[in-house]
Amino acid sequence: MINFKHNTIALRILTVFLVSFTVNKKHLCSNHPSITSTNSPHLSLHSSLVEMVFDGHLSFENIEHTAKDFGGRYRFMPSAVLYPKSVSDISSIVKHIFQMGETTELTVAARGHGHSFEGQAQAHGGVVINMESLRVPEMSFHTGKLPYVDVSAGELWINILHESLKHGLAPKSWTDYLHLTVGGTLSVAGISGQAFQHGPQIDNVYQLQVVTGTGEVVTCSEEQNSDLFHAILGGLGQFGIITQARIALEPAPKKVKWIRALYSDFAVFSKDQEHLISSENSFNYIEGFVIINRTGLLNNWRTSFSSKDPVQANQFTSEGRVLFCLEVAKYFNLEDSDHIDKDIDTLLSDLNYVQSTLFLSEVSYVDFLDRVHVSELKLREKGLWEVPHPWLNLLIPRSSIHQFTQEVFGNILTDTSNGPVLIYPVNKSRWKNGTSMVTPEEDVFYLVAFLSSALPSSTGKDGLEYILTQHKRILNFCGRSNLGIKQYLPHYSTREEWKAHFGTFWEVFSQRKSIYDPLAILAPGQRIFHKQRHLDDDDLKSLRSVNRVLEAHR
Ligand code: ZME
Image (cartoon, rainbow, N blue to C red; front, top):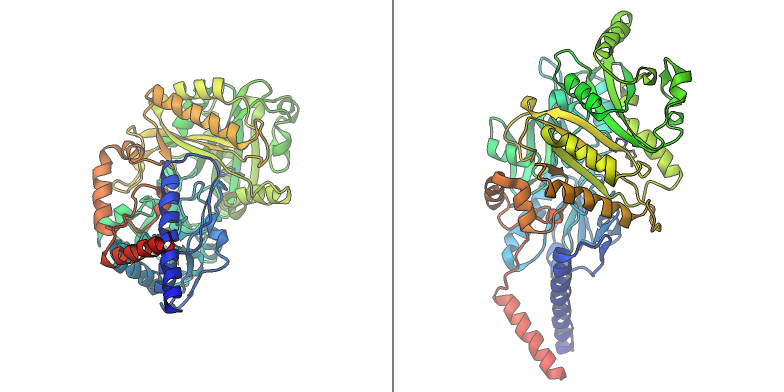
């Protein structure tokens, strides 16, 4: 009886070994679009974690949802999901796994609202931490000269917006979509139309609390543990799990003038955009997007935008050609009502858009910031939200942007039916130095974002394979022509690619890894560092006993 039990366990251990070795190999080498793995929980993990006590709880069941993300292409099952109720829950589990040392491949991934594109917040066979369960502290506001709010890292930006507005305040720098967690966007950068002025979201944080890869809880800022602070901001989750953040606030405007205007010449469009991001008294938000070969272009806009010249404007389509749409916004309050239109006329008088294509709209600050959520609800209604999202985000130096747009919008992309293609410049001379974010070398660079949705079963132009092939062509062109681009939110699979991405910063990045997460426990889904498993004496004993069992069965 006892023997039988031992043999079973030995065989289970062997199975776990084999399964994890084979799957890991696949994990590292394959570029296949839909990579799925659903092996059963590691036996050793289960027995070692099941005895731990948490303020929240650890679950081994109903955890499939954490093997999915917004990208919809990577699916790696964890062994367990932690629903933390305290920072100490997070610290305990990381510390526990750290103390197990190199005898286990166990890793830990913090998961926010699940909006990674390519499995970055998944932990194959490891522990996923459901950061949205961590709702401590309650948002606490500090008004005064430099107002800020302390939030839990699992908080959604949309909730922070609503709470801040009750104090007449709001964060300064945003993402386009607000149903994302603070910890998630601060781990990458957080870029939207305010970044030209305020820098990305990582430039607008005063202090963080993090749990490092050794399970230590550390508070960091420019003054305190500044190396960790800089490492964490845009650090792709490699140096610690953000558990709290102190977000810079400003007085919130009540209303927004939201404006769009079309250009048919990229040189004119980009000249105006660059003028706007560098002038002193400009718009508060500056973005832009590309429209290729679309009919009925204006119907989409009519709902919320009104035209000064509707007859002329209605004749405008991008059928058979490429148009560039400037999108800007000016914030204002009721007391500005008498001069806001004049201010905007002044700003617009510098620009050279096609005169008949100016569209103006006036919305509340919340409606402006939460605008992508409106698209989300429409797409959800049509069942088009939970589809694969092969997204490609590029940062392109100003000196290469003309060459880039000519090739990509002239030869590679033939229409923009699969989703928005954003294009706008920022100037990093106004950004903070020393974060982990990787940018091109020039001060002025463009964000170009290809935000496609794929139809799950399509093999045509709206299918996954076609879109991925287009992205490959775009990247090949960038590499071949030496455009000096950097990917934003990349998903590389080899050390060489990551090294090339980080360039001269690689040494600092990997040195910081060895300090803050020496066993490479954190954020394995980024595929930058790989946790090593070295067999210890106990493992060797089990392996020998497995061998004996196998011998006996022969
Ligand atoms: C899937 C989807 C993305 C629907 C709308 N979007 C977006 N639209 C505009 N800007 C965006 C965006 N997603 C990120 N930025």
